[in-house]
Length: 338
Ligand code: DAH
Image 1 (tube, rainbow, N blue to C red):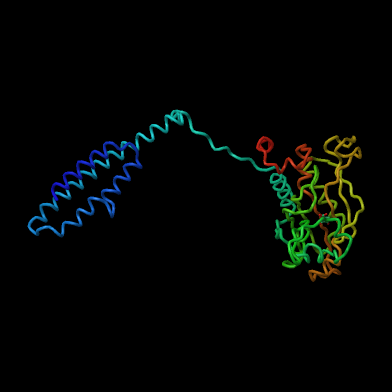
Image 2: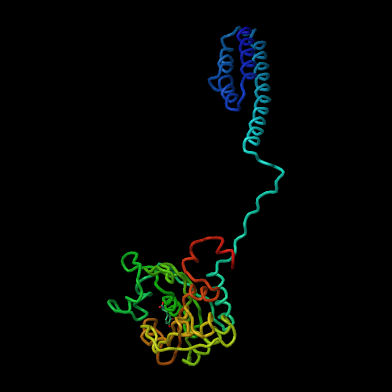
């Protein structure tokens, strides 16, 4: 037993001295000290010794194990240091260089415009409301007076999800959700993402709108024009001309398309305004009594207006962006400019 131990220690020391890698040293540790290791099996053999000899040999085994462990420990440490040193050399890490700074992002132009519009309307007493992007047909169309099969549904190329669920095509369903939750007076704006199956330089299948709704006992078309004039003047600068043209939406009557004097050419006529001097920025109108019927509002005693605008178009006008797709390509060279 003593001899075996001496021999084992000799071989172990030699193997440790010869091992050059962390992995090789780990293997040696397992083969000697592991559950089925050589030294471990020797220790198990202690029981078969003469009881008088056991303590002496036991001590010897312990001291051999301690020596092997110490040798393994220091060999492992230097192997690890070597490994790190070689990697630093190989990867040419210059530890004296300053670290790389994490690049700070900037707010997306669409977010900037949403924030600015919300803060203008906050100044006029409008609260922010929200609704889901996967919407029920009833909120997106039916309650807004688009009956099934109504041709006006074709104006909005809809992504259908399943059964009566769809990706909302506009933020107008938030009008319905708000009126169902709240009695008049109502004064909200609802920014959010909307979806339509449409894609080119001026259309993205995913885009953003802001909806506005004001309902009270005596809201007039004059109030609508006043609010929109204050709004466009604040967003595009004092005395931006505003023009309302008759239009049609199923949920407003009368309905209007709202134009501002072209901010690119100062109404002289350019490519952006198609030489008309005017830019269409939103749809609006007086809430149709049929909509009040769906939310159990008393159409005889209240009135209100609604409006809805596309954010991307406003961001493009404000920042002079010529292609809507730039907004969603996530190119930092573009995004960093805002
Ligand atoms: N929801 C309409 C659309 O996406 C825009 C709109 C028009 C909203 C008139 C309104 C409104 O609230 O009164 O085409």
